[in-house]
Length: 236
Image (cartoon, rainbow, N blue to C red; front, side, top):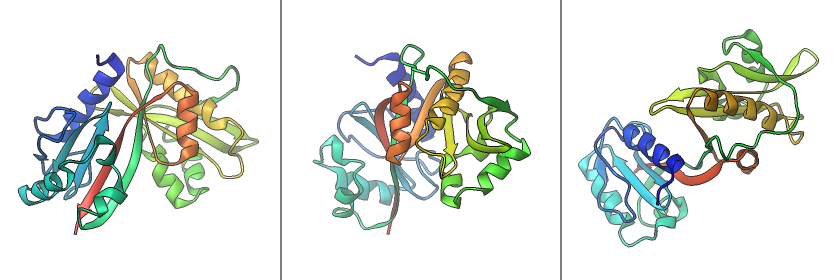
C-alpha cells in the first residue's frame, strides 16, 4: 500500500519527467523526454521511490543504451554509479542524492532553539553565501528559495540559515546551510525545522535532497523518511 507521502513524492517526479511515465518495480522502458527535469539537459535521469523507478533519456539512442544496461539488475543497483560504470560508458555523473520527505504527523522539531526570519533577498543572506566554500553555497540551494529565510546568528554574523523553494505538485524543496566552524551544534536542526514548519503550514510536502551524511542525519532527526534516490548520468 502506498502512503500519502510516497504518493505525493511520486506524483512530483512523474510531473518533472515531462512525458507520461509511471513508477514500476521493474524496468519496462526508458521514456524519451528532452525536457525532463529529472536531470540536466542531454542527460539520462533515474529516480527511485519506494523500490520503484522512473527513467528518462534525451533521445532514442541514449534510451536504448540505458535500457540495455539496466536489464536484469536489482532495484538497488539502478542508481549505483559503480554498477552502471561497468555497463555504460559514463562521461559524467551527478549523485546519487537521497530523496527524503516528511509529513505533518512525522515532523519532529527540536524542543528549543530561537531563530530569526529574514526576507530571502536580505543582504545578510548574500554575505552568508559568500562566506562559505563555493561548493557548499551551490549544494545548499539557498540562493533559490522562495520562502522567507530562517536564520540564527553569532553576534551580527549569520551562522546558519534555511528556507524552501516551491516546486511543482505542492512540494517544498528545503535548503539548509551552516557555516563551517559552527557545525555540529544543532543549528541546522533549528533553522531546518523552521523551514519545514513553514512548508507544512502552507500545505506543502517538504522534500530534503542530500548527498552528505551530515545533512541526511539532520533530515532523519526532524522526521524525514528516506524514500528513494536520484541519479543523473551523461553517456560518453
